[in-house]
Amino acid sequence: MSTGDGLAIIAATVVTILVAVLATVLVLLSRTLRELRAALVILEEDALALLDDARVSVRDAATEIDRVERLVTSAEHLDEAKRAIATPVVKAMAFGTGVSRAAQRLREGEVRRGLPTSKRRRSAS
Image 1 (spheres, rainbow, N blue to C red):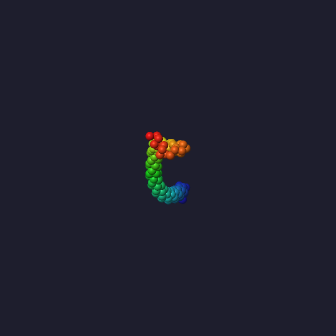
Image 2 (cartoon, rainbow, N blue to C red):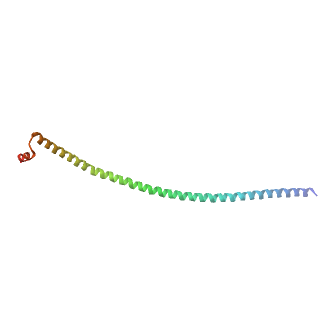
Image 3 (cartoon, rainbow, N blue to C red):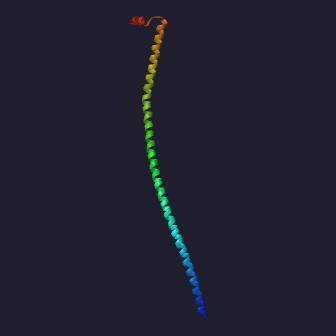
């Protein structure tokens, strides 16, 4: 065997080892890539489920916001109606109280003078 033959055998051995190492690396990369794809599928499913839940939550929140807005609007209308009614009602109640007190004072005045009510009405006419 010559030196050239020896170098060729060594070169062939080194190339064979390199090919084996590269084949092993490719197999490991292929396995990792499959695991990565499986994880990506799971992640995609989870993300889609999460987005669906978020859509439902946003729709529910929008419904609740509309409901609260209607309640607030109703409360504002009731407050306006209360203000519109309260002033005349308070005035009417005050007028009624004033009339009642005046009538009571008139009756007390008639009783104090000692005149019966029937005589008083005749004398005023």
